[in-house]
Image 1 (spheres, rainbow, N blue to C red):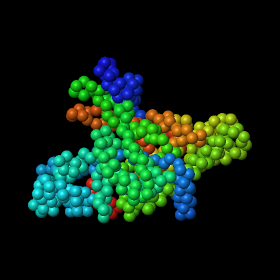
Image 2 (cartoon, helix red, strand yellow):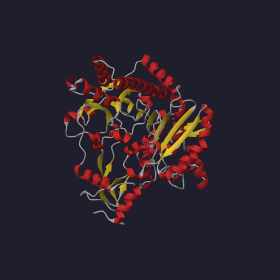
Image 3 (tube, rainbow, N blue to C red):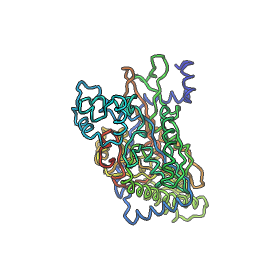
Image 4 (cartoon, one colour):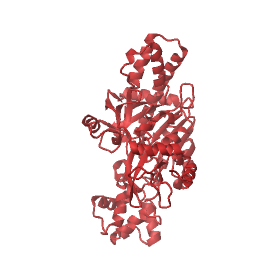
Length: 505
């Protein structure tokens, strides 16, 4: 039973009692695995553009931008970078004092190569009267590690990834936030304006805004653009309740309900509030220095060119269907487009009467559309491109995580392990309909694609509920197109030592 205090807590978060009951019900029932048709591959859901097509799509995108459309670069940047430094936290807490693991040795052997080295060195000289090299020469490795991690030092253990120094340049080091501003100017600016939106956690918002205010003018001058930079936080109403192992609500020591962030799927609400024709979505840590940006910029233009060319065709077909002035052959042509270009397949399509076919085609054409860049599978953890069945019996292209696949189904596990491609979260989205109205994106979420994980709090076990992921179930009912992009466009930073890779030097 909910107490008066519970109801007040729910009201403060903007969560209804019905929603709470629904979430507790999901702990009991769990979520169904998805039914798969197979993995997407080149020629079966993944487009691999030729050199000629690359040029064509870049031109299509630049022509589209020249029309003065509203384009936004959306960067999920919430959350601290603590996972990046898991190994270094372990070193600080270890019983030994010198680098022992391969990871620790690599970090200290190459410490001068990190873009944050100068800042760390200056800070340690100020605090301890000795720089990095002197401390290492004395065997005081832990002071160096603490200088990077601790709140009294650079505080990298708690800062968001977007605020860490990633890349070194002649005029100083850059954060990922700055690299995204540069990218925004290079491929997402229209009519001299570059719109960049960061989703940031509440505790980091002030710092983010201050850093952007310091840096934006310099990049405006460098690239000849005006920035419109905006921010949002994950909404408290998207938090999910935690449950005990017996599916009753988990309560804090003061008796209040424990809520946890609902995962990146919560950001569909933030995305829904962006007013734009086209939105690029890319993770905060997937950036490269300027010397490697041309490839990234070219392929961002390619996937955007693919998107706007397919959207144009879909809009033309919708207007034709609206007019009522079409032949049966034209309906067949539109059905072919939906099946082959948008990869949405209905087994019994030929059995539909023309009137039913029109309803089906309108439904499949008039919804948000996204093109996702996919790279060849190199064993990175994360989602892959699949053909999966939808609630209405059709199957279409989806990005799936391993948690959505039944591990006891040998065929499905074979699909997953033998998948040729991987999704690096490289999306470009069209979020308006053919009449220029914005889609309400939460209407296109498949609510049955959340998942449950085991966590603990204060030594007590709990079950946590994640919402359908932003690029998984939250975009399930969109039209999805996969385009193979070069591996060089995918350079995530999962650990601090990833910054030592050539792509980040």
